[in-house]
Image 1 (cartoon, rainbow, N blue to C red):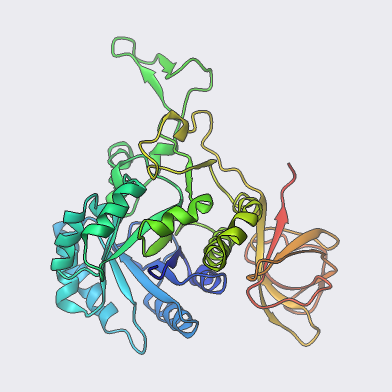
Image 2: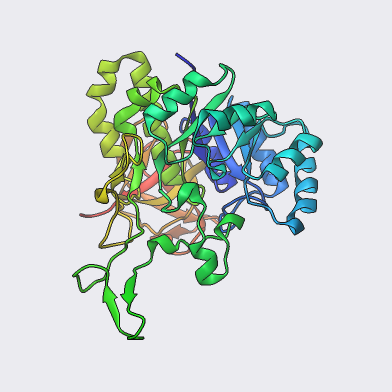
Length: 411
């Protein structure tokens, strides 16, 4: 069986380190320009260098997205940016994720880094895979519209050394492989330039041409309907089918997600893949744990997308655009001080006396009670009310750097 890669998103240096520690084989990130997540924190060149060094020290690869659909005025900047990536020292990216043929050609001219073809390029058949390989691509990301049967046929029809990457978890775009025009039309912000406003999550009504100002729900419900709002993709229950389809890289969506989300999904898929490779029976026995964990982070219900044929009306969520959430992210554990208290940078408020949970990379979830807090000057605190506030905490248990603190939400 071909070696499988778990590819995890990271929108910041903090999240990159969490992805690495919690089980990623590879991480994909965006720089300050030319990626499709302009609203993500993204990476400065200095942060990118630090992240790549950290990942490589842990045996993890880093791919950089440069997958905008470029306009004329972008090309000079693309050339300079890709040249700079190619000259990074002492470490540089392991691959570039590209959608635009011009950007692909420029990358081949100015840097010697593997080129991967983004899902934005609408890669739906084995002829397209062959086309890109002849031009120098080492990997192609399948379009979201493909079934597992189609992917399996692509694997059979392309050279052995050509790699297939496929999204297996995360948000689904209503538009064809993410090529959405709604955002640009409604707001002037182009999804294909990284500035999507996610109009697929908005509520819509119908207005009849001769009756302006009279709005009608798309179906008979006073709340209207979210007709474009897809459920989230989740293939944790179908790892055997993914394995047999010949996919090389299992890709998680979510460069806008928190460290808690990334850690939860990475850890769960890592264990599911490893359990299946060790024993299919162990994988089946642990399925309740996988599902419990994957449902503990934010999600919009689950679907298997196009993998088993054309989705039905059940793939959409018509009555809401909000996430379900099982846990709140409180912070990530840093270094220990001389008093055996651990550094935290606050992500959400919690207090002394509160019961919280420690999430560990090895799969353990440990319930603890917060015993004490102090600020950076050593003054005692009862709570941490300020976003990104740095403080130290004692939970009565030894912690490790990169453990995550979270709080279960009441049902």
